[in-house]
Structure formats: structure tokens, C-alpha cells
Length: 121
Length: 87
Image (cartoon, rainbow over the protein chains, first blue to last red):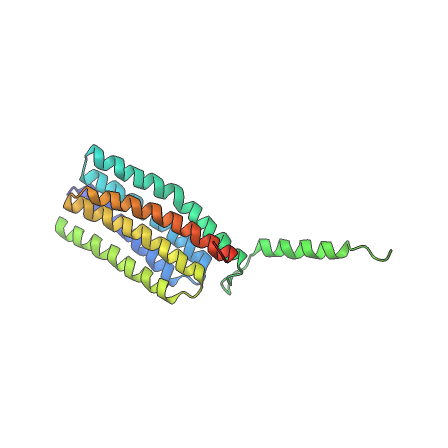
């Protein structure tokens, strides 16, 4: 095993462990999505690159690149979809959240609509 | 020394899996569990890739590809279920 593989694998394993710890420790579901998506993508990228350096064979590198491309493309999509589902089903935000623009906009639109109600015939 | 690195990497990945299983058990909401399942899939792919490279078993990589594919589709299906209440 090369030194470069050792360094990449240690970095990848560290990022994967940090993603898992973030999922356990973060206070609400949106922060958990944030940590798990970013850190696990970077960690898996490092692990795949280390494996490609370890086994420099065409069949291996093609498969590793396929896994990497697929995960890099699909992880943001699944994170977006599950965050959207969580927000639309009113999963509670963290108590210290300071900004929820979508809820503010929804309240403003509802207030404007109730002002423009026709009064009388 | 490099044997030590292999051991450390495998133990770190397995510890990450354990910690994520704790979140899967704790919840508290369904989206939390879906996020934990998604992360378990990604960590399992990483673990399989490392062990495939260590044991020179190329067939394990195909299993990693399948787990990555199924994890994505499962997350999309779960999100659809959370949002609409049915599939």
C-alpha cells in the first residue's frame, strides 16, 4: 500500500466518521442533512481515489469512477428531495433558528390576500 | 505501519456505521431516519470499496455499485412517501 493511499484513506475515513457524528449530534433534521451530504460525499471520494491508487487496473478504475460519478450526482438530489419533504410536512426547526424566509413569505402573501377581499356588493 | 492504517480506516468506518445506526434508532422523526439510512448506504459503499481493494476481490465492487443505486432510489421513494403519505 502506498503512502498516498494511506493518506487518502485516512482522510476519507475521517470525513465519513465526522459525517456520522454530525448526523448524531446536530439538533435538527436540516442540519443533519447538511453534514451527512457534504462530509460523506467528500469522504467517499477520498476512499475511492485511494482505492484507485492502490489497484491501478483498468477494470477497477472504471468501476470506482462509476461509483464516484453516481454518488456525486445523486447525493445532492436525494438531500434536496428529503429536505423538501421534511419542510413541507412541518418537521420542527431547531429552537435557535433565526431565519425562515419561506414561512415569512407565506405569511405576507396570506395577509395581502386577506386585505384584498372584496367588501360588500 | 501500513497494516495499522488499514485497521484504523476499517475501525473508523465501522464506528461511523454504528453511530449512524444510533441515529436511525433514535429518530425522532421519519426524515431523520431516512437521512440515517442514506448515510448508512454511503458508508457501506465506502467500507466495501476499502475491503475490496484490500482483498483484491473485484466482485465486491459490483455489490458497492448496486448498494449505491438502491440507496438513491430508496431515498427518493421514502421522500415521496413522507411528502404525500402514500407511494
